[in-house]
Length: 273
Ligand code: ADP
Image (tube, rainbow, N blue to C red; front, side, top):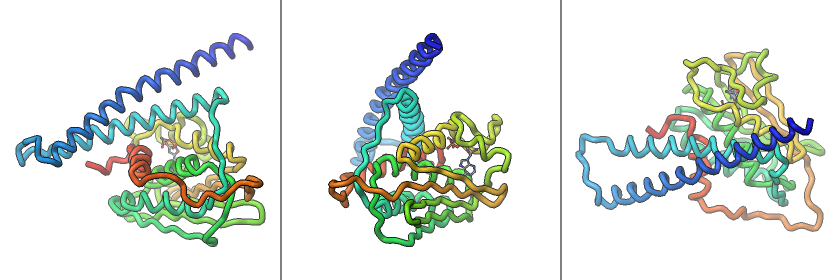
């Protein structure tokens, strides 16, 4: 037992270290790319009109983001496994957090020919949650929904509440998941289509991370799907607040960092080219 715990710790530490090592060069690549793009914009870099430079700089950016997402996800699941991952709950309006993050990916949906519908039964529901992690959950679910939904398709985001819970659902009209696979999709590194010829990119970490984040909020997740009709993912969070603590209405986040977050979480979807 002791020996296997020791091996597990070494493995976790190795994953954490190697993932951090991936992030440093990736950030340098992205910063250099920013300088190049800035100089293209200022016409300091000359290139032939026939050469589609934008296509290649976008490719570098998107694939760097994909690696960054993978590194971030690996760091997070390693932290969760070793008990070092913490959420920072605040009293906030969950409706506006969900609405804002949903609206920020609307352009991606439009580009892919997918209709995004946001609906809520309440304008304001104050609960204790970590806005950053709620955004992470939503971006993962929305990116999966886009990934597995063909145009013309519809993605619905709906918020409701009961006496003691908030219910958030993300529903798509995509390929769905065969019933026999529903129980395994939250497992780590699992992909329903694991063939070499599969149509969508991914690592199978997203949903396992989402499940852990929901559970850290004392919430629950469930998935309903019928093959060929689509998929509905519903998570519930307890309707409770932190006593004697202010309500945070303005989540401090500039639009650039939100855009970056969206680009990173949506990087498995090839739409930038
Ligand atoms: P990945 O990075 O592969 O998307 P996830 O953990 O997010 O990893 O998802 C695990 C698997 O669950 C996916 O590979 C896919 O087979 C299935 N899946 C997730 N979301 C959907 C969806 N909206 N429609 C169909 N299949 C889905």
